[in-house]
Amino acid sequence: MFHFLLHAEGTRTTSPLRYHPTFSNLQPQTFPLHTVSKMARDKALTPLSEDPEWADVTPIPQVEGSTHPLAAIAYEDSYSEAMDYLRAVMAASEMSDRVLALTDRIIAMNPAHYTIWLYRARTLQHLKKDLREELDWLNPTALRHQKNYQIWHHRQMVVEGLGTAEGEADFLKQMFVKDSKNYHVWSYRQWLVKRFSLWEGEAREREIKDVEELLEQDVRNNSAWNHRWFVVLGKSADAFEDKETVDKEIAYVFMSRQSTILC
Image (cartoon, rainbow, N blue to C red; front, side, top):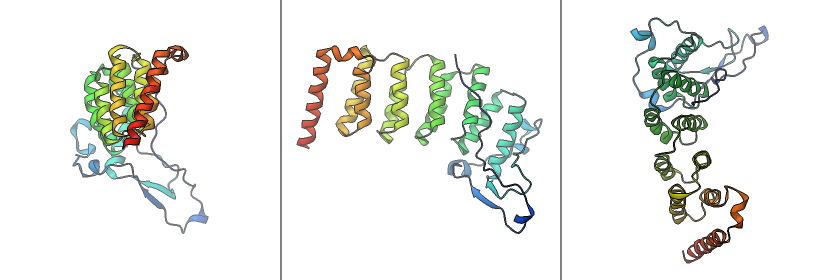
């Protein structure tokens, strides 16, 4: 099953001071939403208010807590509008194709918005969408935003729903080309090994092969060494009782050390 938890809305807000006559001469400050991507800003999007598909929805604006917030975030108009419509569909518990399109639109502007990801997951499950297609949609986003907790949590839920790790090693290889020490990617790969029992056979060989390729490129890649230990010796304490395996690992360490000295 495709399990998830839906939390309260996770928009980035400050806790504005309530209006008081003492502050009447102060000008409100605004701060840009740095998570809004340039790609999304440059992309020409038809305002939802002008889109006939959304004519039946009354947007719900964000409540800043005061009519005179001192530190209101300067959301771009396109982002504020999209969020207003999202609040409306969430309030109505709507789960539809247009909701998926709306989450796509918001994620392009703010990929760290965890509520969007969770509502997207819930909508995917409700509509019984093809999760392979969701991975195809997700891959370019992950490659653009490599260190994003929300993306990797969503990927984990999707792969859990698929019930297989097929194709994941190939995609992670693309991620390692960009950053071979990315904590998020290695944590996710460790989850794959544990969740799908990739400790034995061809799956184990693939894990070791990919790690050794990375260590050949950089023997000081501690993340790769950690994953090798996890795959070879991390399944249980009994692994250390296998003298042949332990000796083989020690020999590999000395061989790698020798290569470093020669370099």
